[in-house]
Image (cartoon, rainbow, N blue to C red; front, top):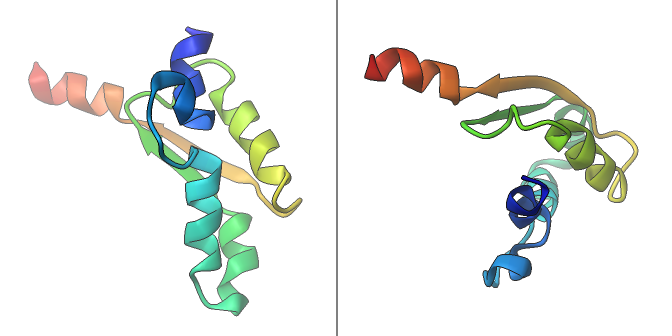
Length: 88
């Protein structure tokens, strides 16, 4: 399970030449108006089918802190439950 989640942090391990999830988030925040960056860093919400994987939230916040100590993950919404209800 740990190896599967590494693709979020080190895509090259899975043969993908792309940016990591923390890099994508940092670039997205930095592309915004400078006055919005700090509030955005303090209100990161994870929304994906795989966000409920144990340790993902902690690891992502730790990685984001290497860019700025302002980063805070304030919400985690797993679409797994939403998709399960729709598929039923």
